[in-house]
Amino acid sequence: MRISERLEALGAGVFARMDRRKQVYAASADSLERPLIDLSLGSTDLQPPPAVLEVFAEALREPASAAYCLQAGTLPFREAVAAWVQRRFGVQVDPHREVLLLVGSQEGTAHLPLALLNPGDGALVLDPCYPSHAGGVLLAGGRLRRLSLQADQGWRPDWQQLSAADWQQLRLLVFGFPHNPTATVGAQDCLEEALALTRRHGLVLAHDNPYVDLALEGEAPALLRCPHWREGGIEFFSLSKAWCLGGFRLAFAVGAAPLIEALARVKAVVDFNQSLALQAGAAAALRDWPDWPQRLLPTYRARRELMGAALGRAGWTVPLPGMALYHWLPLPPSLRAMGSEEACSQLLQRSGVALTPGVGFGQAGEGWLRLALVREEPVLLEAARRLAAVTGC
Ligand SMILES: Cc1ncc(COP(=O)(O)O)c(C=O)c1O
Image 1 (spheres, protein in one colour):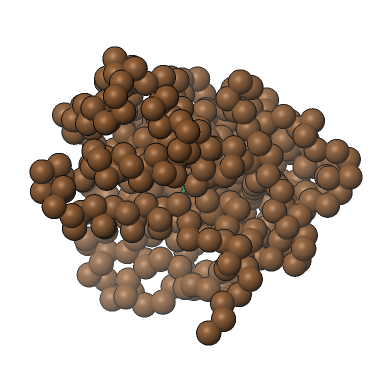
Image 2 (cartoon, helix red, strand yellow):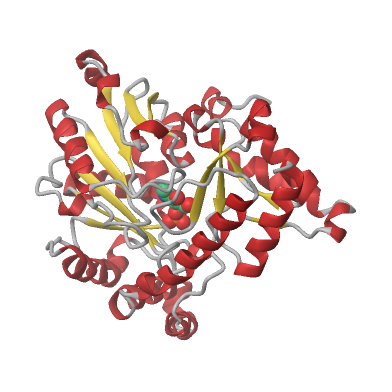
């Protein structure tokens, strides 16, 4: 049997590769002595607002929640999004034409290229970037161009890497600050600059922004605060991180009406939206608990300090992450030569701690590891102790 060349180009994906390694570790004798500590996924252990879970539970009993939900049925949710956008950014958006419900923002960024690219059209992603950004372009048969981010430039894009001829080949820029995996908050002026460039060269700018409410330092940028966002802009938000609802797969896009319509047409082929019960809970979260993300920040800040100090004492270099959820760490000296993929494999086998290899987010992530602050403090301390022991620091 043959699979498509596109799928070949996609490879296994960093989270799938780590998933297999974690499964092998969990089945090994070592895991009895040292249970797996999984810090390889941005899947938080913190909880959603209990009242939102109540809304889900109540709404699940409604017969309509079991039915397919076509686009028209999502209007109450889209209205809740429009009200949140108004409160959060002071921007009025049309819930009929400028808002779209998504089955996770990953789904939205992965499907968008299908709506915009013809085979061979160029799309620019950051390197490193969240895997669905590059994956969506490859699935759509687009030509992927990567813009390397560098630590010594504070992970800020250097547009000089692109010539006028390069820009002409491009149809889409997928951008995203606060930035996963580098844990950099980014800046509004940098996003404004990206939008100015995409407008000048006639590209669409897709801004993936699931961490907009999770900056620990400074203020997160937002496309919706750029005055010209309707000129080729679309922004993706998620309830996964800020309301701790990752497993429920609830997110939304807000953007220029033609982009929302195009993405909705792709989705009409692919899915019938989330259940009305899930939409009801998501709407309640946005309406009644808009400050939930702020309540999470002290916990993430404390975890960041604790883990940073513990790894620092063990000799690791620990840059201060500007956003919640992640540390982005240069490989410690004893692991540097083997590269991040092998380093994660070895760390898992020898310590039972799962981290994510930086190279899984793109070649510019080589030499780095991502550690997610998604366990309680004693577990994080135990992870730091085990990592220190096996890296000989
Ligand atoms: C930048 C970025 N985009 C999207 C996602 C996925 O979010 P969702 O759960 O909404 O699909 C993540 C998850 O880690 C992410 O870091």
